[in-house]
Length: 319
Image 1 (cartoon, rainbow, N blue to C red):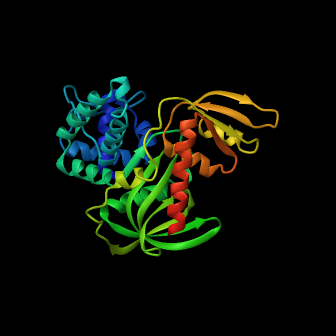
Image 2: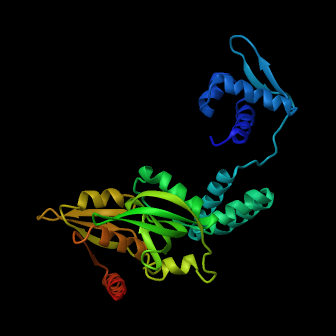
């Protein structure tokens, strides 16, 4: 729960959904004391919302007969969650969800209050997400939340970044937070390097606000920046990977939802057949598990991946 207003709305939603609820049940959901629940009930009654109290065993709180909440009352966070989910479903055109998801999103946006819609859209301008088998980022949830809050406010942050055991403190203007096929990244202007850089969130040890604000370049296009070095869909044909004995178990745990088949070799390595995916994900796997993973086929995919890796290496060396 975030603030008293959110808790008041939650109480109304629970009462409407369940009929009658005890103070203890509400206190558990709201993560507050029963005395605080009683204070919230009084606040709602002062707003002329007909909440009835039944005393004694089996008693509790219930909404008066005939009272109904408006059909859609979402907080900024709830609206963001719903619209982000629809954004992902909208890409499933092969399943026929593209148009229904788009029209559903439009309907929700039409009934959202202006400030809620504005806050949600502002957050989306600094967030890019593509679903996939996810690494557990629970430990970094506070860092991701801070970065997501700082980006639409265009407020600089300082991060402690650990790369290959070398920790540096960097001031960064956070342009966007990106979730891409199991990994989270921060894209922003790095004052130390003097250019836009990409940072792995799981390598960020700490993040803190500064008092400085920045203006993001008007010509910066997040989608173009992120997709250009990686490429789009390879094709729908399955891809065969060869995983060494030291990395096969960890690799399989990360891509278990994509695995179509497996075959063990005498040396302990495993051939893993995965469904067609994007170059982004394949490149991540090859870099993350290098040199323990290679692409066996099909040949055209091997060529595409090799060309992309060479391009990335040349770009990195030229800097």
